[in-house]
Amino acid sequence: MRKILPALLCILLLSTSSPAAPKKEFRGSFTPGTNGEKLLSLLVSLTNPEVLELRMDEEPDDQGNVRNIHFLVKGATVGGFRVEKLALEASFVELNPPSKWDPKAKDPIVVKNVLRSNLEAVILEKDINSALSGYAGNDWNRISVDLKPGIIGARGYYHVKNPGLTLLAEVKTGLEIRNGKELWLKNVELKINHDEQTDAVRQAIRDIQPVVDIRDFPFPVTLAVLSVDDQKLRLSTRTPPKPFEGILLRYVRGS
Image 1: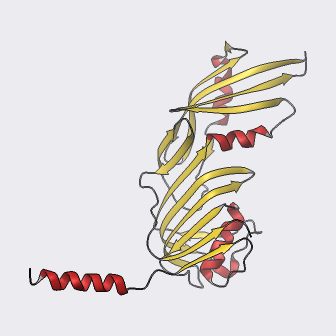
Image 2: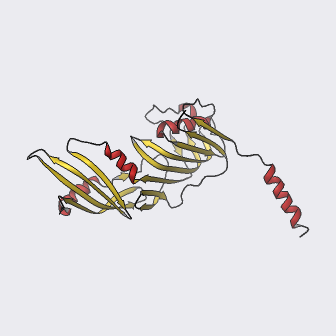
Image 3: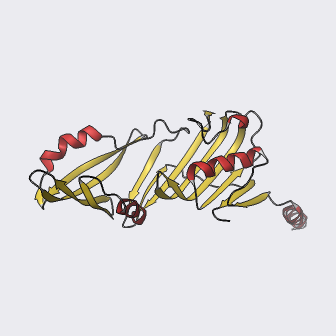
């Protein structure tokens, strides 16, 4: 006991006296001053988030190297589509030099090498339907999505100009991950005006597979977890990204 008490006191003194991790918060438009802030600014310009948190064990150096990095994006807007959550954790990252980072360039940032990376993405049913509500093509309108455990349902009205008919199309499908890089539709059912049309759609489905391919994603990730419930669709690597103690730069949309 006489040996344990002094050790506990030392631990308490060290934990209470150690400095807090650096933290900065930005709102609305801001001018970055450090390489870490430049990276935050670039991520903000690419995702237009409601909130973005960037964590690093240290600032990227002038060659673009950073040992550990984690970012969490809430309410990203990509191509007019809202993503509820996008998180990435990576280690021993080699980027191109910060002086070359440019949100207007074809490749705003170049990931040259990464030892390991984990990813998680969450999309809400209400955000899918919000994006679809404004869609009105020449032939399709009133498109909506209905998520159920393990199943994605969709319906919409298709206008046939000749002979001038409007048809109700209903699709029910599952999803599966293949090779850790692709999302494929599975067990697809199609009904036109409530009549089964599965055979007619098989070739069309084969032509669009895979529906998602992340082979060109800058960070090397292997998808392993896919879940669909009544409210959301979630994709993740086997180990989800986890934040860590370090420099924290936080952005909040608004003035």
